[in-house]
Length: 138
Image 1 (cartoon, rainbow, N blue to C red):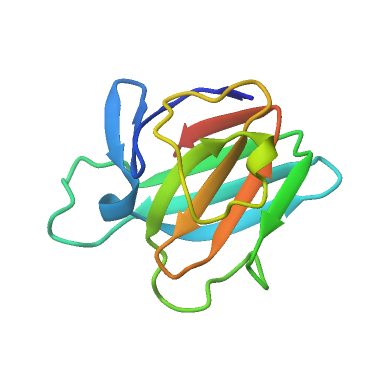
Image 2 (tube, rainbow, N blue to C red; image 1 turned 45 degrees about the vertical axis):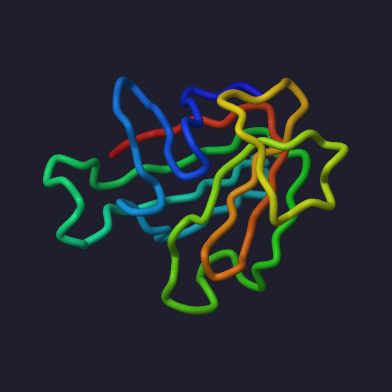
């Protein structure tokens, strides 16, 4: 798996010289999955809390290309069960650990065959294997 960001901690990433706190400063706004293109996008928006820096990015998205594995406990990828859309952790896990959906490794970059997992405070998760994950801003 190729990525254009670094996982610093289980809730923080480094991207383009910036430090992004995904747990405190962002909330998931939507998922897009294109089966034909095998592309999954996870969109996050800037949180509205007074602790968020004014110059924080407004919108970011993780774009997963050539998805070969997808596991999730969402009943609908377009919305959450409740209002809590904070990320609990992001991590890479070896494919041999596909049954693990509630744990993470402190790993900055993935190995070629790793899965990426996004776990949310409300207990929902999405686990993906793909060739490439690009973080984009807009």
